[in-house]
Image (cartoon, rainbow, N blue to C red; front, side, top):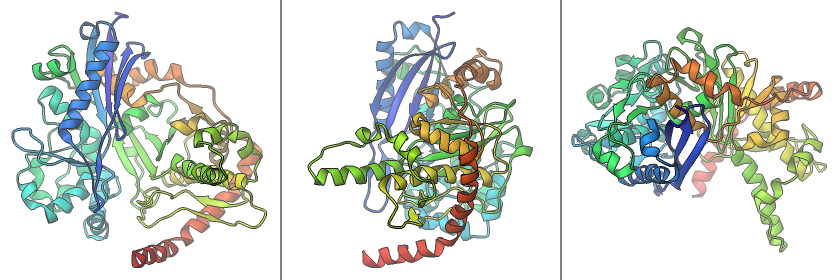
Length: 519
């Protein structure tokens, strides 16, 4: 029994990974390769669908070569991947075009039209999810307006992981998480005709695949896929949730006893609260955020900052440029060494930073494509480490802004992502939220979550709760407590942060108009 293996396939934006776990959740092997996508002058971001499958098959084959006897030891494969986007296929299961990624900005005007239109309230009430340019529902608006012939040929509109699942099993299906937050009713966990009608897509209802729950339903690996991957014909394959939800599952958000929050601080920032059922879901007046179901009855409610560690990368990049101009070659990684001590020694409040550095603007806890980062409150005594402290503080205050939009801040926050390794950032976050912060020692959370879903479908665990208790609870690290003195400081800074944030939208619009005029 101890020799059996579960596999998680995680097709992210940057990297495709295949990860092997034993039944206790210990990682025993990994294979990966860089993802490739194209950016277009008109704001498009596309990924070759055939190549994506070839890369996924290759990493599974490489994993089979890395883990001894994987073909005979594997009991199930779970699949997850990057969220949003639009991957269209014809009736022969062939790609009609390259896949549109969540990075694609072409549908911005169409997304705004949906927000300004009469159906917005019905869309949000059904999906409990804000309208964003990155979503399939917005991208289908653009395709309908600009490429109607393409839409006319479409037999199914898939997401990335759905496309890979089709290649593995021959089944055209959608998972609960993306189907519901895009086109569904979170209360009934089915597609909503009201939402689809409000989106103006009733005539294209047939391209939405049947929804399955990967924790209860699996399909067999086909002979063709087995030949390409080195895995056995008939291996049970489960369609996992979108990568964000798989990562949330394996990083500790699913915990009905504690009902924690989860902050993911990677290139982007995600702040989530656990909702035990549909009745616990909280809608907000700004119609912002995402609501995604776990297998079972529970949900994750999320607010997403478009940029998290990208803000730190930007500040460190400025420093490396200055040093390079003086003949000193230092990388951002070099500058991170010892940075925590300097940040904690700097002055909180020497400047206030709003971390909206991403060119696409912000979408949590408000939606504004023109939002941009800003440093305010500087004077001649403000030093570089004070600015770096402001960036760290800004990330923590943005997290508080997001959690506040979803109701009371959860009693405990779990944290993952690259920045979770920073003692300074953990302390600042705990103090700004006035909650203990805990990391989870799981390196490949997305793949682990997909494997947990697959294991549940095969009866290795009776339900997702049991899977989380077995794989996640033992990996929870000791909490970082709030600093009482800093908590008072951040209470005051948060008021100033919000006041400034609420005053900035006309400034952002004026700056956007100026940038456009100067092009």
